[in-house]
Length: 374
Image 1 (cartoon, rainbow, N blue to C red):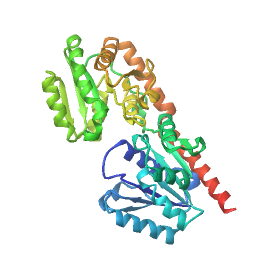
Image 2: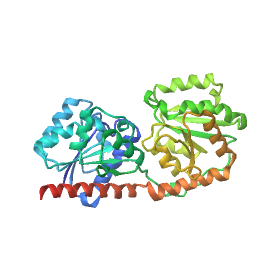
Image 3: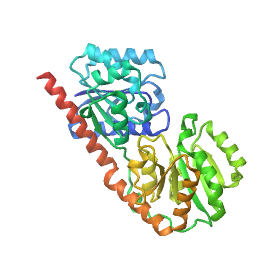
Image 4: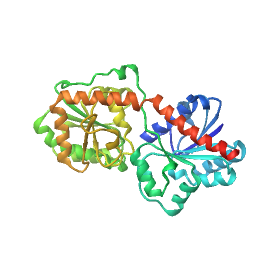
């Protein structure tokens, strides 16, 4: 099979969607039925220097943010390479599917849907393109599937579930959650970018909740890993709330330092209201941390209240502070939730499970291709 994967950005910037795309590309080389396939990846935002991160056997075509160049490359591949299956990583790229259908009527087309980019009702023309030109949509959560089906007026059969995953080392599979304070501290952790669009992750609510937490556990510290313009706003908020000495805005943290942060924390807290899945919850679980997640998005689907963490109203500061106090006050429950989260990752959200799910979905699309050619 000749396969073309079109994406906004994969290797040039961090983020959950980018990590999802990287895993998809890995799997395209690992799935036995695709081992001899020709895989081409066409990426709008990536640059030539990002090619070092691409798996062996994948043709990588970065467009350095040139939309014109990407469209020209796309049309050239349609006319010359004639891919049999085209994957799109974002609904913004769906208009390319119209070109593909006009030039290659029998080519099958699949869209990945991640989160809030498909939650809102789009213009009629975009709904029409997705309904009429995309053969199948792989969504990362039931929450996103149900919301997108309503927003885009989709039939249930057009959607397939493909949950996120993380890699698990043998050490992480046996990591032991921390029951006691570390150097006299209890440590809360959030990992996310601090772009303006990330305000709904709930960093500000955690900072405000910290005032109540410190009245009971005065040596609690809140660590935030991630960089962006929101960092300065959060720093000022911590000063205004009188908790600046207990809030640590770390900026960008490399993988080794991030693993150490997870390993030396007690609770992962991100009461977001915009998670299409919440891959960072999986990262926390694989290190044995219970999570505090919001109950208005897919966080409430991934985490189970009282089992692998606690779900809170992301707008309710008192509820957030009480959830933190509950976990800090009961080390036995905290450790048990972290261990159960670890088991969830091992059983449901590991790379092998993801590869199997993706292989099943691609087989379904391929069956449609063979049927159209018969």
